[in-house]
Length: 101
Image 1 (cartoon, rainbow, N blue to C red):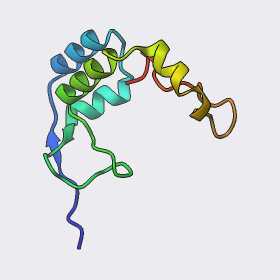
Image 2 (cartoon, rainbow, N blue to C red):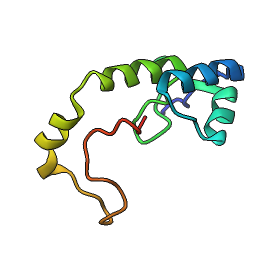
Image 3 (spheres, rainbow, N blue to C red):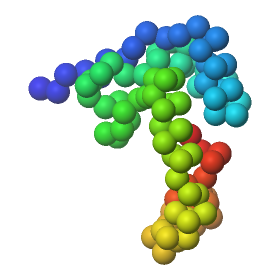
């Protein structure tokens, strides 16, 4: 039997604003409200979202920094032949975009 996913307790809005400052974007109101109630999954908990981990604010910042170290233009050129949108035109066919988090 699969155990249920566990989420960490939420954080005050101050932490959400530090995340926005770090990412240099405004998070959607719904996401900020969600993070104020649930700040990521508990360590080693089963996935909530299609085998993907629900990241905490600090983990979002860490992953963002890792992706920012990659050369966006080179990665998009190298993987251009593998990228597509389904249905066509709904997403940019790029591997990395600095506006995604």
